[in-house]
Amino acid sequence: MNILSKTALATVLATLGAGAASAGCGIDAGSVRILGNDFGAIHSVADRAADCAGDGVTVEANLSAEHRDIQVAALTADPAQYTVAMVANSSIVPLLNTDLVRPLDDLVAEYGQSLNPRQLIKVGGKTVAVAFMANAQHLFYRKDLLDQAGIAVPTTYEDVIAAGKALQDAGIMAHPYAANTQVGWNLGEEFVNMYLGYGGQFFEPGSAAPAINNDKGVAALETLKSLTDLSNPDFLTFDSNATQALWDSGNLALATLWGSRGAGILDAEGAAPDVVENTVLSGAPTVGGGDIAATTLWWDGFVIAKNVSDEDARASFIAMVHAIAPDLLKDHNDEAVWLIDGYQPTPAAAGTAESAQSGAKPYPMVPYMGLLHSALGNEIADYLQGKETAEQALADAEASYITAAKEQGFLN
Image 1 (cartoon, one colour):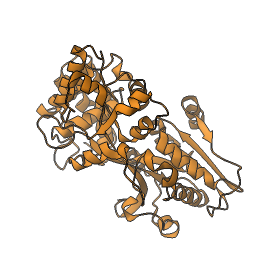
Image 2: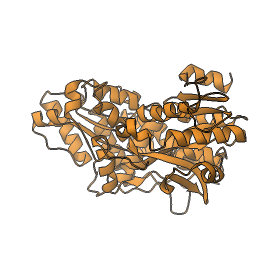
Image 3: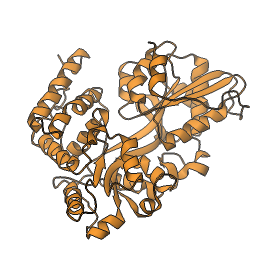
Image 4: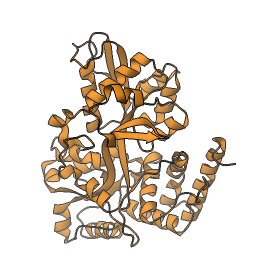
């Protein structure tokens, strides 16, 4: 089965405006093929890129929660299946490790005058990506339900756990908390956030050797266990869409969600009115007596595939720069924490901003972090289900990582 066929089974391929009259992006030829995540702000960017479709130019987008799983294979093809990949701190690393990203300095110089220098992501002195929005996981809470139980707004994860138990004891909600704890990348991210909140280091200094099986790693897992004990028993299936759906339906009082989900909840188009009215976004809690938010700061942006023609690369870059131009904010200012000149912060941005102000650290961009992230996401579920100790789960994660790191030459 080829890459396109595999993708078609799991995702929706939307052709955006192909064949429509040109809107004057200044492109006279080329194919723009976009791969990205599946949420509102990303849809808005892809929709605006479609403005550039017209005579001689086609624009297509595949927006899927599985984009991370298919991007390396899709961009390895020559020509690449997609000319553009919308990426974040972590998802760009596998593309850089496999040399699948086109340096952008020549395109930025010729067509990137509207970009702010802070949007240019550089590695080794070369621009490899253009960032357009910031993101972080943080606390969402229902003010009415906390008030009903006489609970103060949690500022630590110990507070969140106590609040959840109080809501259960009061008979207000049986499963009051959720986070993105789906086995795999999402669960790995929850450990990363919590472990950094405890002040943990992922690797031995100056080395790719793992260093997570320690007191801080055990404490991070124990905290995650206490939180998932407050969640519905199928918590290992919760990705962002599932957690947001639970929130929208009024079945949660507390959640750790991406800030980019805030606008979709507060826009009153999906959630029940009482949910919208009482949803408050606040910074990520601290944990274990620490003083930094237990989360990571992220950017979202785009890269241009290396294995595409100069014509397609030029068309793709121009279309994406058009898509993220300040005009985007006229209709979509409230959808994200944009890194675009003219952005006006909104209530949906409050949690990400507060997390940054509370010292949240950027997600590590070392080339082997993704391997450890994947190992954690696949190995710690057994502990959360009570099948093994925290120490064994961390040992299993380290062993899995070491095998992968040796295969890729990061460890001897």
